[in-house]
Length: 349
Image (cartoon, rainbow, N blue to C red):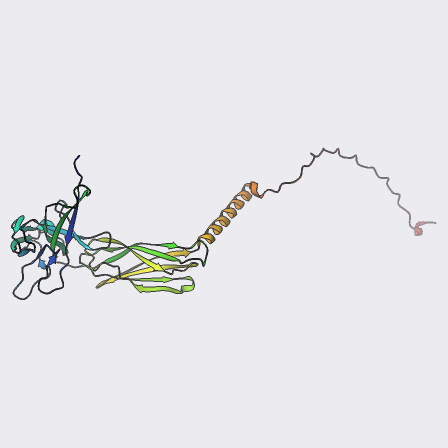
């Protein structure tokens, strides 16, 4: 029976903080732009107009004691759905931006042990390219499948390292940010006061413009009569929200009220843009919610029954047995004797 392998692409795109390398590194090899005469570059920062062609070089360094062979390709970047991190498309995915415009001079390169290889590449911006930011990366992919114990492991890992490319195409830049689909879910104890309460606020952060943004998000919650329940800046926000990308995020609210009525507002801002969205909430313990629901249901049943002219069976009063009534014949009218009119004394002779 053939063993099933699942391909996992791991792309490391974070630059080291040590000024000696400025390279995307996974411990075995690194990828970085060729240094200029002024200083080393952590990433490729490129600018071009539609129709223009750029030329640059990328270096792949091998840190192991054996030669390594890599597949070298360009890829588009995107924000991950899980936390909004910077990630790139795999070699088998369709490329529409930098991944389709950049072409290394060599698609495969063998790097000697403890050595490095520099490869030129060209980046041709189409005539109809949209203005704004187009992020991507040059990726060195090790096409070997790394697996654990062949007898027990069914997962294989394929590793890659990429040097980021930040390309800005000339033209109007429009920073724009939207907060969408704000939701709040409460976590209440069954009995009020017996347990901690909390809530989870979820929302979608959407870059609707054409430039990369570094968003800041603030959460504010107000209760009944406008009381401020919560006001703080959020930290679990992507440091870079790429153009056109959406990220679904959640924020815990510890100590949320157990009984209140109000709304939460999320305000997202970045240089040149600011947007807010809110949603209402009703905080109610489970026991009170069940009782309130039962009361409302009972009231609805009674109202409908009255409108229909009947009472629900559970409201009917059971009475003792009664004999059916017998119709009684109407009695004949009694004839009264007419009284004689007495004459007045003055009328006598």
